Amino acid sequence: MIPLFAQSTPAATNSLAASAINSLGIDLLHLTGKPDDNALLSPYSIETALAMTYAGADGRTRDEMARVLHLRGDGAQVADAFAALQANLDELVQSSVQRADAMKKYGGKSDPITLDVANRLFGQQGYDFRPAFLDLLKTKYQAPFQAMDFKHNPAKAAKTINDWVEDKTNKRIKDLVPADALNALTRLVLVNAIYLKAPWANPFPESATKPLPFHVADSATVDVPTMSIQKSFGYAKARGVTVVSVPYSGGELQFLIILPDDVKGLAKIEAELTADKLTGWANLPNQDVRLFLPKFKMQPPTLPLGDALQKLGMLTAFDKPPGSANFDRIAPRRPTDYLSISDVFHKTFISVDEKGTEAAAATAVAMRAAGFMRQPPEPVEVKVDHPFLFAIQHRASGACLFLGHVVNPKDMSVR
Image (cartoon, rainbow, N blue to C red; front, side, top):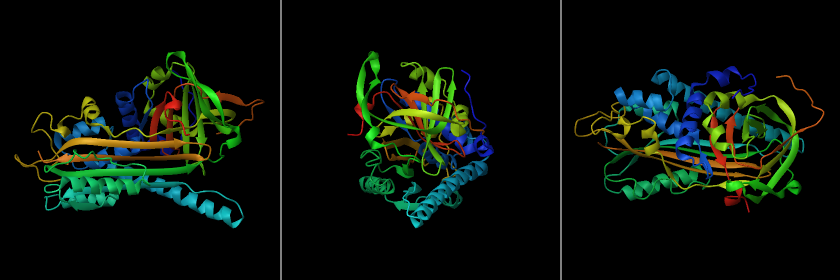
């Protein structure tokens, strides 16, 4: 496959965090996303929660986590990269608010982008956590420490964590941590939560939305509410795939559509997806496009990621074999009392309609003891009428906040 990439910015090509986020997201989509089912992940949320955990790993555990998480450089460089990406996301929100305020002064109307990212450590009170680790996560990941009593009341602790996630995601992510996931041996839960509400730069006219056929499995079609608009969008055509980027207000974030030419080509295109391709598609040349895009809404159940991460090679972090986990940088490792990951829980939500996109995700890591623009004569028509990949992407870095595929909008369409 020879993709047609636009010239990417230095920030996009040099972002350690963005490359790691996209690479892990693709790996996990391959392992957890079934070709015949809709799929949704937040690579940003998963990578951030695990990067915080990686900061406390040592020895072989640290080496394995670095490989699986696609992390390059030393610990300080990794923490600085994630801090820089978070700062960039904070800046785009501030710019969005300023634009909305400026438009109001002149009688215009523009809703700002809402993008809330929160990290927190929930740790056993009285446990011997290393001050340097707690300080690093508070400083670089803005993840304060909250003392819990897992030993005597793990159910209450789980409720506290779930309530915090629900609050940080505007009530879109509920019951992230299953009721039986924590117990008296739990010592630390590292959590990332992200909430996004982003209006399109150019909203789809509601009057243009009509039921149109969407090809699903076995050559069948279903009618789904399909939006349409003609605007200048980022566009690239490569062998076997069409890529369209639809900007959100301000242009710093975009909805990336990766549409196979073949109605049944999703699996092939997904297998060929790489972090470099996602980065290259972050800044596509503009083209006049007549776009048809189905409305959809997706909220999968909590997804345990422990098995998938172990299949990727992160074994000792889960204490496989017993006695091998090494998180000595979080707390002193003793023969009869040391930390390991018990599981990683991830939950997501997304809704795409004429006004824009609302999306949320949360990830919990539970640890236990043990260019030039040309105007074409005619617009290109892109009908998203069969299974496709999508991402919500930060253009400057190329980082994908969300990544998934749609195989049947009827199962989750906005009603």
